[in-house]
Length: 82
Image 1 (tube, rainbow, N blue to C red):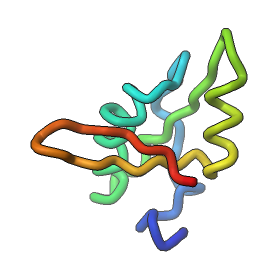
Image 2 (cartoon, one colour):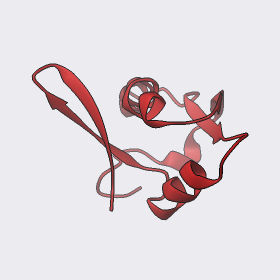
Image 3 (tube, rainbow, N blue to C red):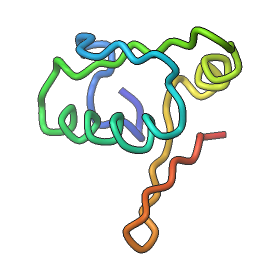
């Protein structure tokens, strides 16, 4: 567990295999699954893969596959951690 993730990520089981895990998925699908994990649901893990580019998986690896979600006037924005 880290200070920014209030549950043990290694305890999650994969429920979703996402092809082309981009910003839309991180901002919407993964945010929803994160809410479920915070509530104690453990079968909400995501296995993200890209079939065309290593750019996104490499960027996610640099952030331990975490992202911040910021709500601005009802609009959801995904911001990769530095």
